[in-house]
Image (cartoon, rainbow, N blue to C red; front, side, top):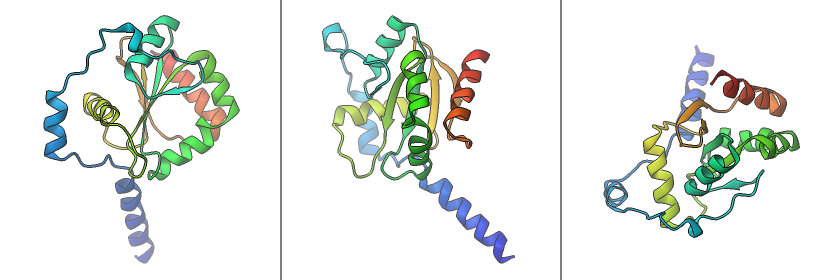
Length: 174
């Protein structure tokens, strides 16, 4: 009985520790009224293959130009245990970086607790969190060049080779 209680409590802590931060009413009203103009193509920074961008428009533009899917990493980089494990076990590994450089556009949408972000970046990330209905972290989306969801996944056990194969299978199925 004690073992069951410990398992249940540990599960609850793991689930709650990787839930998105709560949205307060003040932030939600700001999110709905602000509109960001992206009419100026010169304002969109260039994408460097194999690197992470935090800019939605840069990712969409690069995906269309390079005809590649976008890997979107919804993460709590400085507090979510599973996000940190995914980064350490997969995203920071040479095998993944090599695969991504040749096959993916990588977009990081971070929801940190201690890392400072601009209001514009927070708004973009919150808008996309709502648009894609993300419920917890890490959530990994694969999107086409129009920003439409192809597949959804998260942390997977097995390390970098297994994860790259998992991504390849998801992309082949769609």
